[in-house]
Length: 59
Image 1 (spheres, rainbow, N blue to C red):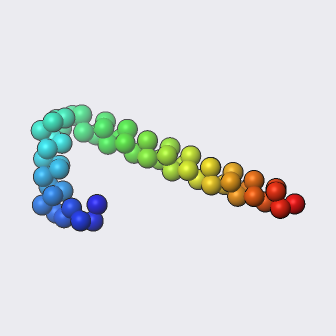
Image 2: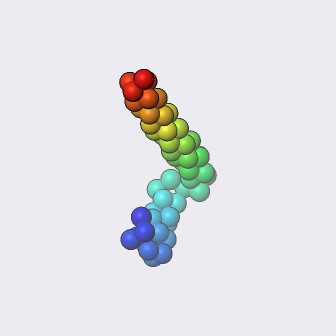
């Protein structure tokens, strides 16, 4: 996302406002944030389970 730049981000925000409207954008952002948070949590849990499994196999 670092390659987008400021003009690109402005264009994306304007398109999102046009497509979804100002009332729907906070709901979409909130849902995206919750989804991302759940994904990170699941990824961390899987990584921890993998480490625990390797530790058990060593013993």
